[in-house]
Length: 118
Image (cartoon, rainbow, N blue to C red; front, top):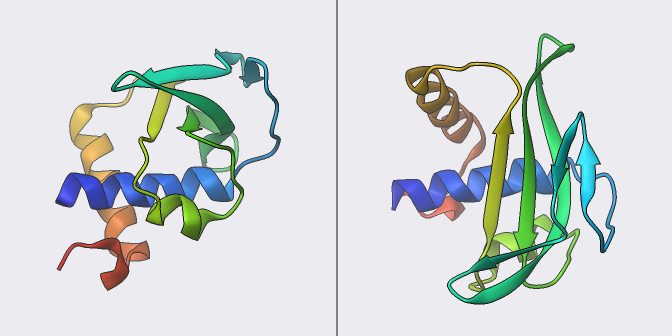
């Protein structure tokens, strides 16, 4: 259940940083993501992309959120039971332990009981 909650937190972050809604492949910070992806045999569309920066200038990763249908409503995205996919491409080398630590801190700092981790 903790992974699902962390995934939900990631959806919140990406949803909040969406900058555009295009039906073709998209590019951000040198990372190109396809317009569609498949999860469990179901076609998903690229909802949007966001970039995580550290210290305002260091590009850490670019993330793309794929959904069954495009949406800008973060709450609706989190509540839907349809497949979702979050692709991340790291722009710098980050140790696994640092990634886990950052996800857990972000979850702890931003999630409430509604995240499902009770």
